[in-house]
Image (tube, rainbow, N blue to C red; front, side):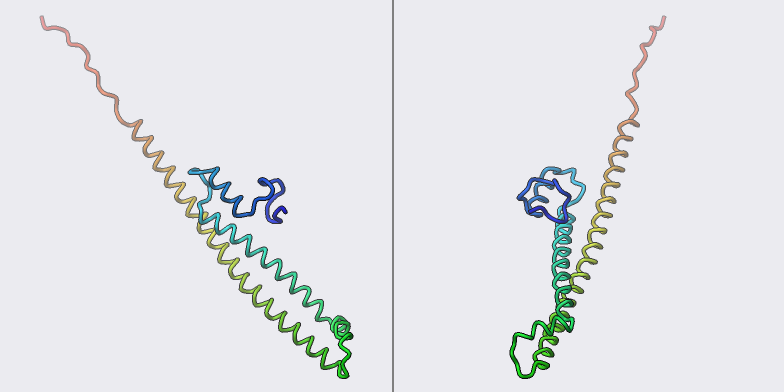
Length: 160
């Protein structure tokens, strides 16, 4: 099943996200744009976004179930002599589940923000290191071109 976070046709089918990232990182080798930690953080970001989408879907379902008409329909089959107690119990269960799901979403949201910051920091560090490496290469090239050629002596005319 293709990942909803990866463009279609990005890699062979059947690869998991982490396997595909491993293939990419070994294919690009030393000249990789992103380092291992950046790839790991990106994969973790995809996992967090996936979990957030799942939790949001569950939260939407709980909010739908919390509508009075849906609580009424859900408790009709109980056959209780006190249906108001059954409805109130069902409503409290759904509200508790909603609170738990919202708390999990809040935790994942803070993780997502931290991951975004970590990825941005890693990207800026990679850019800085790349700039330093390029400057060192330029400096080395300049030293090679600045070395004077050995002086050749012109032949002397014999004294007469």
